[in-house]
Length: 211
Image (cartoon, rainbow, N blue to C red; front, side, top):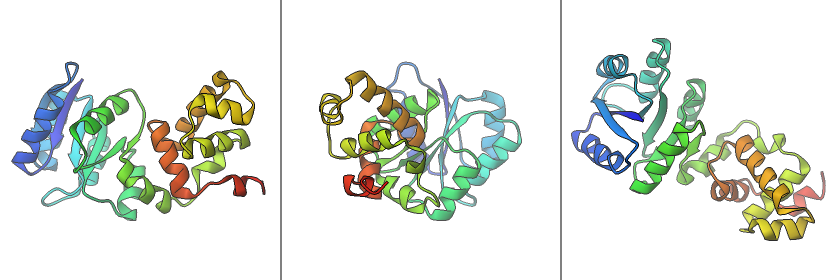
């Protein structure tokens, strides 16, 4: 996996390069400090994935991504940010950003996000999850079936598959299928983020009883 880093701070670039070099299947393939440099590097290297700062010195990382998309770059993009506004989230959705990672994240969290995005999934830092849910115009839970909502509620309470199967009178295999569908529909990385989502939006058994 070839990765390019776009950030206007040399120390940040060096630190990120050191982190991604910890993975045997990841190659630090190039770097850039601004949009013009980034587009040139993208064309030359054709990276699989790009780590890009949301707020560069003179431009937004989102604008760089837009330019890259317009120039036919098919790389996956993970935004690195200290925070994100509603406007940033909406713009990110427009340009199909693949992930958000807070700059305060631990190295293993960044590596997990990289591997997940490389496999075609979305990744949102748990620290941004509540903001993302609050900013959503419509709730992704609307896409869940009643049974999937019940499973999500159990996930929010920290239940394991066996406990969920027992409480809902279904098999563990069925629970696994529901969990997989929930992750896909909510566009979250794992059951922990699904649980965070359930608690962030306040979905409860009380609400389910009125559906």
